[in-house]
Length: 246
Image 1 (cartoon, rainbow, N blue to C red):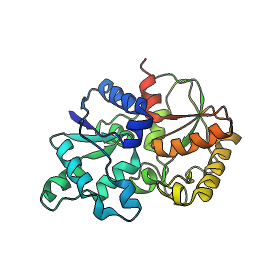
Image 2 (cartoon, rainbow, N blue to C red):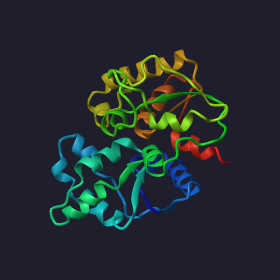
Image 3 (cartoon, rainbow, N blue to C red):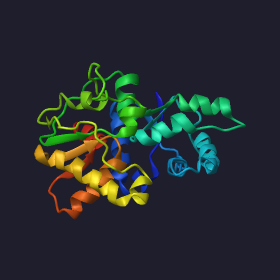
Image 4 (cartoon, rainbow, N blue to C red):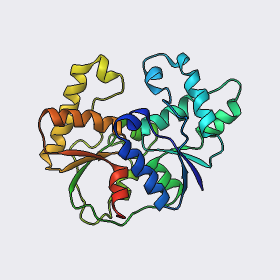
């Protein structure tokens, strides 16, 4: 299975260890993984700010870099959702459609395509799971708590059987952290207040780590935690899953 590894620009620049963990994890799970060197931003920040018409270059570059793979895998639900809903090219629309159907968020790919429902390992810490809005409400990686429907969570499914990992049940399981991409810039005060509320829920449950599938959300929470001089750390789920085999 030939995989094109799609790494968000903020992960590439600020959290390269998340990209490395994703690469190594997919290899351990039996995938043939490639990292296209010419990839850049998928265009999500521009589109979220009302400038989707300026993302044509991003779309063309994405198509040029990720054509030819069986699947495209990314450790970011928000970037995956953007590509799934917005990747277009007037000259190569058939190809763009094919790529939109091939791109998957990491935990979605592991559970739905590789058909792996649990990973054995050891992570002896108390962990809170932050559910990102794009992953939950856009990609349907987990059930929304306001719906009267059976619960499921693809990320949690991969963490349940981890030896030593104490996965807490938060009071507000799917509350937004306030990051929201460019929202945290244009509405800084509201964004920070939402982040503080999110962290308070984790703090009240005594977690050692906050994990999640979107490093952008974790980056927002990490900044607030550091300013508070909190001992709580953030860690991407790929890092937890990859550390298990070491």
